[in-house]
Each structure stands twice: as C-alpha cells, then as structure tokens.
Image 1 (tube, rainbow, N blue to C red):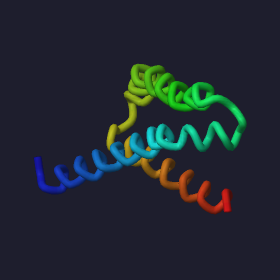
Image 2: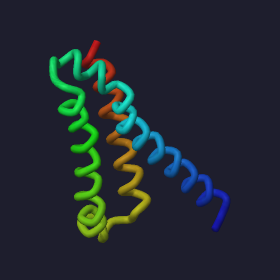
Image 3: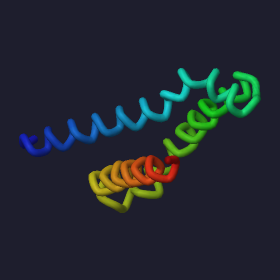
Image 4: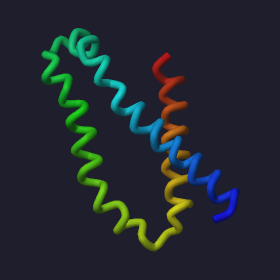
Length: 94
C-alpha cells in the first residue's frame, strides 16, 4: 500500500472513532437528560440502547445496499454527512 492509502485509512479510522465516541458520549449525560425531560435514568438510557440496536441492524444490511459503490466513497459520504449534520445542529440549537 502507498503512503496515501495509509493516510486515508488513518483518517477514516479516526473519523469512525470520533463518530462512535460522539454517539456513545451520551452515557455520561444520562442523569442530566433524565432530569431535563423528567424521566427515569433507565428510560433515558433507551437512547443508548436505540443507538446500539440501530448499529446492530445496519451492520449487516448497509454493506449489502452499498456493495456496488466504491467503499472509500461511501465512507467519505458518511463522514461528510455526519460533519454536515453536526455543524447544522450546532447552529440550530443556539
């Protein structure tokens, strides 16, 4: 593999790591979320369960759906959408 390929794999790996950490970061905020919405911590914990269920369901199906498309393009599209959505959310929530 070339140096460019190694760099791209590293960037994609860091991106996936960031996405997963961002989504699972809600675990530390569960008491605050539960207080804000006046629900129990266990009900607020369903956020984490829903995310895990979504990942488990999409894990085997998305590769089948995107098998005809270049993997690098699909990964970059996913990272780009995540960045766009998070940036939009940052301005909407202010």
